[in-house]
Image (cartoon, rainbow, N blue to C red; front, side, top):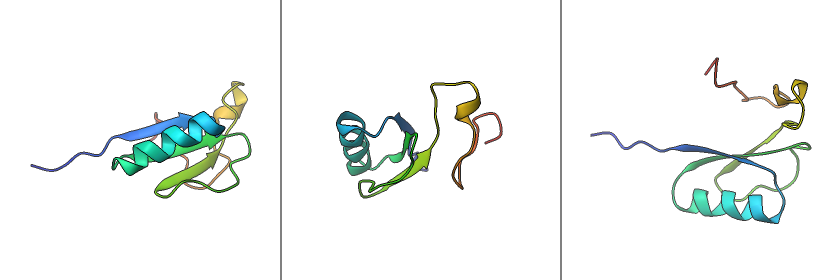
Length: 72
């Protein structure tokens, strides 16, 4: 049997989002932390991405590695 690691996407890198991302990573999950800037420190084991999910045009790629669920 192969272990499956869930991918979690946390929208917002404020205190709550960063804490959630860190806890999920600590528990062994794959985590993507998404905010408008996409810059700054990310907790260990967390990949950070830039996107603005508040607009229809802002959900697209702004960082390498971003893949839309429809193309993944």
